[in-house]
Amino acid sequence: MDFEEIIKHLGDFGTYQKRLYYMLCISSVITAIQVLLTVFTFGIPEHRCAVPGLVNDTFQKSELNDSLGEFVYEDNVYKQCSIYSLTSHNVTTCKRWVYDKSIFESSIITQIDIVCNEKIAKSHAQMLVMLGQVVGCAIVGPLSDRFGRKTMLCSFLIINIISSIAVTWTPTIRVVFAFYFFIGTSISGTFTPAFVLGMELVGPKSRVWAGMITELFWSLGTIILSGAAYWIRNWQTLQLTMSVPSIILLSYFCLITESPRWLISKGRYKEAEKIIQKAAKVNKVVLPQRLLRRSQSRFIEPNNESVFKIFTSRILVIRTVIVYINWAACSLTFYGLTLNAGNLSGSIHLNFFLLNIIEVPAYILCMMLLDRIGRRILHCSSLFLSGACITLSIFTVLYADKSLTWITTLLAVIGKMGITAAFAIMWIYTTELFPTPLRNSAVGTSSLMARIAAAISPYIANIGLIVPGSVGKITPMIIFGITSIIAGLLALLLPETKDRLLPETIEDAEQFTNKKSDDDMDNGEELKVLNSEKI
Image (cartoon, rainbow, N blue to C red; front, side, top):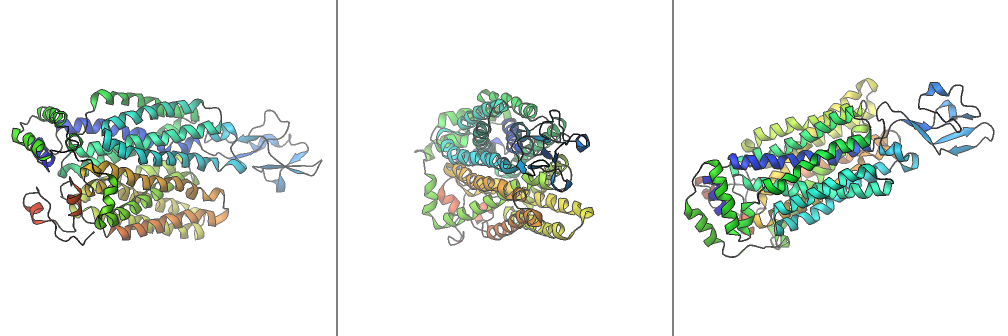
């Protein structure tokens, strides 16, 4: 555990680590914005069929009174997809639409007329962002463990910048889909190595704060998007406004250093020593030379263990499956609730803001409680809170009148707070459960499970677009609520990692139990096997 010993002298979260960490956190702002931009760029406004032959037709019904001529709408209702001719007595499918511009001045939906039978395209676009994240997670973990955290972070940043700006001028929906897929890929490729790099810079006492700070920056990104989307109603202007500032992150090539913990695990001691000495200088501490010498003498051979070695241990197999299920459940509910903002009653901008601002108190509570009551209990409690609130909202949808629709929104917001806390804890929890040579791969594959679930979430959140009535409204709530509760029950089987050293080898990771070893409690330097039969 040589790097842990170095951290003790260097400082858990010194000036050097803070500088790098806060710079890395800026990438969380950018990725959060890009993940959720489709809520507004694919916004579906109120719309109806345009009156044939009426060139200057607008959405306002009052302008149609003297202009309908031979065309009327069925049952005196302005239809979204069909129009009835008094002359031929035929109902025909609309070929042109007019849109209400009070909420969205323009969106990809209105620009390409993706409505009626094509309205599922919104779910396709959101799915492709998530599917892109699946691919990103699948490749960024192994690549980061092999080529380094910084290398992959900077490479995917370039992809993100090019894709998010280029999508603004795409001519067809297929090209739009392609760019959103690449945006999704770059999101995972940016966030995952940035998070792991940041976590590997800090000591055990600061892991919770560091992990939560990253999530707070993520929330800052969604709050910025809320305000920008309210003031900028044109999708192209919004896309550019939210994407161009990411160019500043190209400074990472010069300002960010590689993870010394990763360098040591690969046997690249001279590079690691250079970074550690620089950190010591900035932190104004003097490191005993014996620490660096002992690091090199202990790690004679680089540790290049494959992520598949996890599956050679029964303990780690069971633990990994539980972790995967929890990541999937958290992601499905987290993104499902957020993407469902437009389906809640009231303003989409207000609902989106509430569903995202509630993340801030969730993260603050995590920072206050994680080191007091531990990861496992707080994680499970958060999942149970989320599942209970979301499930209860079924009854308000079915039985409450319109004057009480705010209760449904309130329950959704509280449910979002619970799932936000659970999701944030899983990032820290997973980082602490797996050893250094496999840590990025473990977080990457766990995130892969989350992204697969996230790719499904748009279709669940938008079931109401396909299934009419109350059934379409409550089905997403049933799925999200039950999934959260099941995941919470399974998580009770995981070991506690509070105040434990980050494991450096698979053997260290296997030694985690639900109780701290005597050595951990005495001097925090070694992990001891207490019960190998526990998960």
